[in-house]
Length: 150
Picture 1: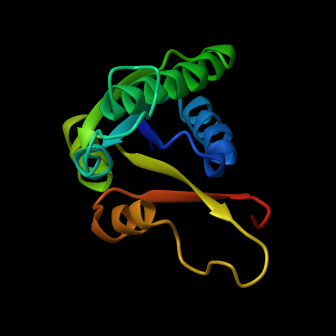
Picture 2 (picture 1 turned 45 degrees about the horizontal axis):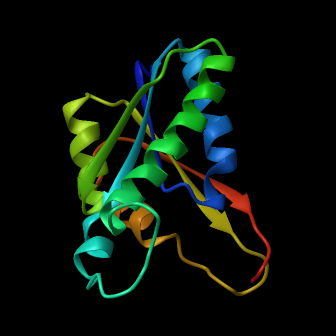
């Protein structure tokens, strides 16, 4: 049923259970698992560069490094499960790049994480997840990870 599964990540705490779910789905369907991180162009294009941000050259480089580290950690977990992941870092608008990647790689299922906060804090999905769900022609599974109110 699923030959290619895509797990987009933002390196946030709302992705923990999504990682586990994506691995389980890929294992059970003998599917390829792709892990994608998108460096959000809106974040680094709005930064003026007037203040110290990170030890790297600039915010864009820091965000790319964060993405590389996040997908490397996930890739290690995927390998521990006996699978060989495909990993990628892209730049641009996250929902647009996720949808484009899914089309380019002929993805059969997207597995996305979302924070599940107790109480009335947030009834909506994260904006990227919400946009992907609304615009995707590919099935999307949303896996909520409980997090505490801040």
